[in-house]
Length: 395
Length: 122
Image (tube, rainbow over all chains, first blue to last red; front, top):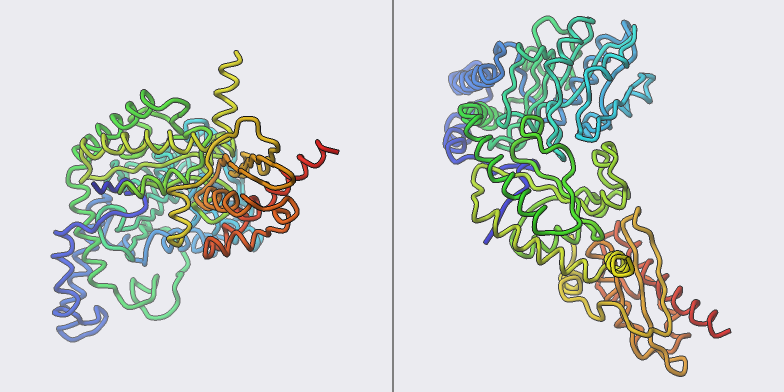
């Protein structure tokens, strides 16, 4: 059996999305900026996709800009705002659990003299509005808080943070890459000035993203070149990708509730079986359904290391991901788990399961069965587990 | 990321587990870094007649431990001390660059065990 439980990394492109994209490779292949019919037909498709994205976010089409993905959108939001508003102030507020696209961009901005406050979340992985409020200064120009975290699924109070920012006349950006399609996001209701999303996280193609910029918000252009995207983002339109993004977001947002219900039912079953059947493990983050992405589960298995678990699961056909240093290539374990107070030695033994729409109960049960074997095998090798068992015997 | 040799050693590691009445033990690494390696030796007339390991760590750490124990069985203590991490890597036909430290741990665990043994004897 093959079981894919890494949907926060990427999803399979929906076949209906691919169908819509196909004509734009070799039939309607014109450059969307060209004036002939070949180009005009492509431009129509791009504009249709823009309407689809706008509709899904409750935005206007002219607030939607296509990019190459979530990373570019995040870069554009942060760098573009700092560049355009640098005279007003040089202070940015973000969180310690953002995606690297935000954190690393902030670090770069710090080198350019921007002051950045990194707010830490509580144990459940949520950054409170009060913390954001306390961090605000006279010279704060931007607050960037993700809609939902990729590792522990914690959903941030973006509506309230957005309202606070609006009140203080500070711009509010949210990285909604993990949220779109899984929870409802509405740029008006949630008081969002800028938003990043990436199509491949909701069954769209890779290599296409969107930045929403509320009308009236000044952001410096990021990619320099031609006049595409009203001069905001140069580069030939990726017509098939953009068409795919439009179709994917329409499909993904058509039934968020039903999708979320399916995922959370399976996720809760997975969590319940793991906790009941595997000793010495704990769930990272909150299990409050309203505060966690429906398909996300993050578990620490004591005394063993995440990459080993991951590889052994992979040998059984199961794909998950890990917050261990070893799987990331860096020496530090997950910055998100460390931020919510998980000690390094336990962060190394964490596994993230992110469920998707094609998963079913049989796959989840198979995963737990294989996971039990894996954990048992690795604990038999671990010098730490024996110590604990020995201590238990001594007690 | 890993070659077949490393994956095989990870999947079916040799000489796994604690050793009853070991003549020497060596533990290196720490949990917060994500790697702990413990090597047990059975020694007769300065020759390692058996070796076992327990490892908390990634696939490369487990594969390196397994390979290192295989390499030292039958060797004299002096010969075992000469084993370098590069020898472990060679036996595994290569490790990814960020995993080199796992082979270093294996070399250090062997040295630690032998030093402990000699200190105890002295």
